[in-house]
Amino acid sequence: MKTIKCGSSIAYGIALVAIILALPGRLPGQTAAPKSSGGNGASATRWSVQVDQVDPGNLGLAYSFQIAIYENLVAELKKTKQFQQVLRDGDLKASEVPNLLVLKTTVEKYTPGGETRRAVTTVSGATKLTVRSQLLTREGKVVLERTVNGDVRFFGSNLRATHNLARNIAKTIKQSSWAGSQEPTATISGQL
Amino acid sequence: MNYFVVARNHRDDYSTSRLVVRLFALLISCSLIVPAQNTAERHDGSAPFGIRATHLLGFENAKSNCSGTLSFQDNLLQFQQTGKTNAHIKIGSVRDVFLGEESRQVGGLPLTLGKAAAPYGGGRVVSLLSHKKYDTLTLRYVDSDGGIHGAILQLAKGQGERVKNELIAQGVTINSRQDQSTKESATEARHENN
Image (cartoon, rainbow over all chains, first blue to last red):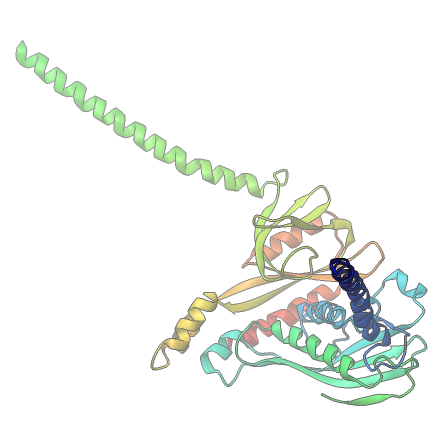
């Protein structure tokens, strides 16, 4: 009788060890599946993006703002993990990347504000930026075109507007319907 | 005789005290001269260049909005974050340097909270007085793959020109767009002050 009990407890123990060993193997697989399928679960093809320098247009946008938009865009696009690689303008590696999109940013409207004005009046002194963001293929075909705003109204320095703008652009790209699709065929345009 | 001796002793005491006063004066003047000489050495071209700066964005391995020291060493432009490792770029990789002006509120979060708590709009009056002008130094540089990077540093008023001149002295060529951008920055600063 004792031998039977001992045998069953050993069997339970073996089963328990087997379950414990099998479980960690399964979990990474479960988490890996959504990663490979992309945002909409459409395909395994992952695109890379090259961020172009900001085109200030004819507006008197300070160079520090142009650089801040560019740097914040690179950082925010990396954060989204939507793209396989986020490359900078002029990067020589871009020619070797197979699925490459180019992000062009053109400043359409710029309202200079002031931190002191914001602090004193509360209602005025907001720094506002409106840009047109375009995602293009290597051949120059526009796959996504959006007008995006970024501003700072109450607290923070003027450069904070560039951070907010870059975050909005990254969010727009992430939420757009082309994201994750194998072939960027449809042209999507609109305003955020 | 005794009177003469006493009188002479008084004179000796007086001259000793005068000597002590003179020595003190000499010491004080020396202590004033030595820092002045040190400052002069800093401006000298051969001495290492170091300047207090706030890193706003751009340098890798350096946090945004952190204070540190900007210096030039062995063809490198270094930003040494206080008590941490330094971030650096090769001076030869710098393509453009742009100067600008910015006015910012001082005091940080504590003063902001204090201003918000002040009654009868007192905080607004404090805001009107508690701003300071800074120079912003924008650098455009390239990495080893040719990718373009940008960095923005905030310096005390007047220091931006010093860094720019030092960069030019180290061989950095500045594009013609510089003048236009400086004008733009000045326009923005004017806007801000209105």
